[in-house]
Image (cartoon, rainbow, N blue to C red):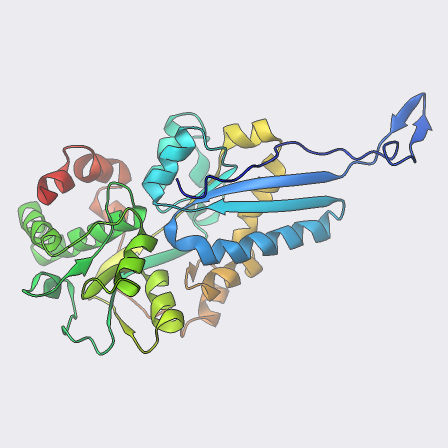
Length: 344
């Protein structure tokens, strides 16, 4: 896990009137006014750095306005979604997780850190924003890349991270898998052949989506980046409007990165109420607008409509249509699974 340098106090600091020299004696006891210094740790996936930098500050301000006696500090750690989930399993004291796919949170639930019904506790299956997978290409699209079939042409190099460590990479892989199934009447053999050919065009597998973006954008590797839509929009609009274009393939996947309390930890830390409010803030109009500002598709229809010019209409399929995360993880991404056989 990245950003391991956090030293987080997990105590509520009770500042009594008596400690300030102004205690009030009631029935032989000192009645203390309580002020809380609250610390939250959000363990998140790679492409959310800019998003949660703004969310964390906005939420702290919102909480303080409602609770003037409290001070809230939110820290967010980033890395590949699968690696981040494992870090929480290994003891990183996350109060909330905001990961790249539901399977990574299910894994924490299976180990008793999160309630089994976590996905029903917030709207939209606990998914505040959605995204999809698109192609980021060099300005002018010199390799004339228009759809998934173009990724396996001679002379085309594709940048995508490692599906074993990155949630974004698993979305990339499944977007390609689903397209290949649809192109070949559901033939898994044909889809395997396509994915095997695709990964022969991948020169390097970064551990996370942001690492892959850096390889394409900063290191100038590859001709096309398979990317979260938010990463592609950030690169094309903010980093290099004169350097990159976005290509939306004919079909792609609906990416749904969910969020959850880490129940075991918030109970131990005494942060359950503020952690719950933090996640609910993501679904508020302010939280939704912050998401849209950072190119995540809001689930609030009104906010999505407001930012409609940013997000083109795309033809998508979802994970359920491919068999669901439990089956997909076992079949494709477990040790010895389909990805391992293809990548060898």
